[in-house]
Amino acid sequence: MTVSPPEQPAIVVRGLSHYYGERCALRAVDLDVRRGEILGLLGPNGGGKTTLFRVLATVCAPQQGSVRILGDDPKRDLAAVRRRLGVVFQHPGLDGLLSVAENLRCHGAMYGWTGRRLDERVVAVLQRLRLEDRANERVATLSGGLARRVELAKGLLHQPELLLLDEPSAGLDPGARREFMDHLTHLRETEGLTVLLTTHTMEEAERCDRVGFVHRGEVVALGTPAELTATIGGDVVVITAHDIDRVRAAVGERFGYDLRLVDGALRLETPRGHEFVREVVEAFPGDIQSVTFGRPTLEDVFVHVTGQRFWDQAAE
Amino acid sequence: MSGFGGVYALWWREMARFLRQRSRVIGAFAQPLLFWILLGGGFGLSFRPAGTPTDVDALQYFYPGILVLVLLFTAIFSTIAVVEDRRSGFLQGVLVAPISRARVVLAQALGGTTLAVAQGALLLALAPMVGVPLTLSAALASVAVMAVVAFALTSLGLVIAWRMESTQGFHAIMNLILMPIWLLSGAFFPVAGAAGWLGWAMHLNPLTYGMGALRRCLYFDMPTAVGAVPPLALSIVVTVAFGAVAFAGATAMARRG
Image (cartoon, rainbow over all chains, first blue to last red; front, side, top):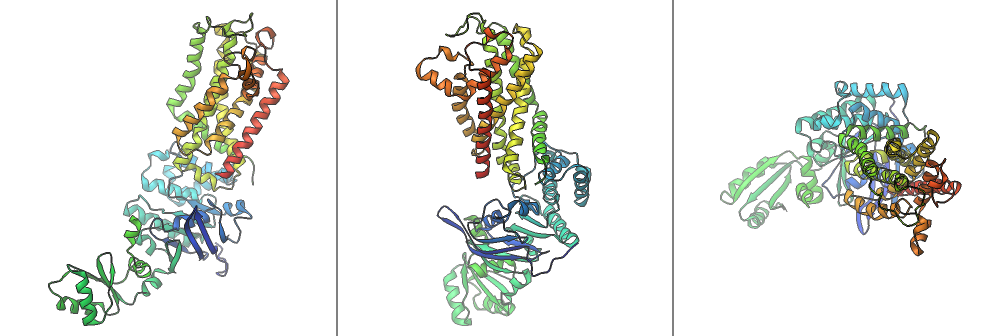
């Protein structure tokens, strides 16, 4: 295992913009991915994270701005970048009519692996992901979770230094999702692999070393989950009420707080949430429908940064 | 870039997929057999297109034409795999691998060629049983010509398939191209019998030369059965050039998409 110095990031993106015709999908994005970290790009669909993924995966060439992947410029030496890059797309890329091992061998051959070296590597990767007893099963007969793990095995087969995963847990049940993340974390720890993944689930993002929020074509926040949640001062209180405008005005008048109205609910970030909850419930006993109170989550950070609820965006 | 392991792997995958889909295997055997039965049963014997050499029976005239038809359908419809691979997601993984697009296209073209020639050879092997004379050397030369024709046709199919998003669109466009190039290749009626613009279209149709080369190889020992087709050398040169141009076109399409 070799750990490169932290001053040489695995990915350096500067001023990357991308357009689909008139529509701007990425606006002057800057992003550094450090060696050996798991970085999650979190954001609603249509926010630009898939476009960013496609550029980094060498599906699309960068239109404006610069991209360095493992020190190489994909515009100058595409094959060199591709050899060192493992990509797992959201859409399954396995051939259902081939067995697990056949899929891996076919993939390895395209990366220039041959003969005994390839055979041994296939066995090693299957063992690594505990798939060895599935080697000769056709992919079409596997469960969703197992097929996903074979996708991961395929992405890792040619020993990439950097692994890119687009929505790796889409369509998996929570158990399979946790297991998949366990595999990734384990690989990062044992092989020093750098991982960049996109996700729209908070629980997956919380297991990443760092998380970047991608919203309307920009990386609007980036940090460890702890750093991001710390940007919210204390607790998060969410209030729903029959006459929400009146309650909002009255709370402002009486307590001096400016509550944000987000998707029909009032939100407040405050270091002393428990006191505020007690006071507000006592002050407006008949008006308030519900009050929730908790430590901030990444979802709260998203609301904080964008002023919008995450799932409203996703539904757009 | 390493050797041709990737080309072999992708070609092998096409073969494995074919052999594992029973309906495709049955269809591949049934199609030449069906044509053989229809031809042997006297279809076309009462039908004599204008310009057919008078001392050649209709069966001898149509047999090479049907061989080319079998090649045409199998070669070009095998390229529908590109559309399916794009939809299934398999192609995406190929496109981010460090293998050149030319090699990906080569593997696809060789896959279609293999399947087409296998079917063509099956129909060819049945020829003596319906009274079409066949010598070993004629058969070998014919298979070689069929391989070049099939490679060219598969590459032509790939030019179109690489830009296609749906299989429906693929069928529509293919039928618009396929039937005319077969009908105007001399497979159905000789160039000599076609007047005016039709004759010109047949002279410009690259498949006319593949058809001509096949007739000349198949009836090498009986020149009267060949009829009025382009000379062998010209036919081979044009057919090889057709293959090279179609392959270059398919590679260019693959680089764009």
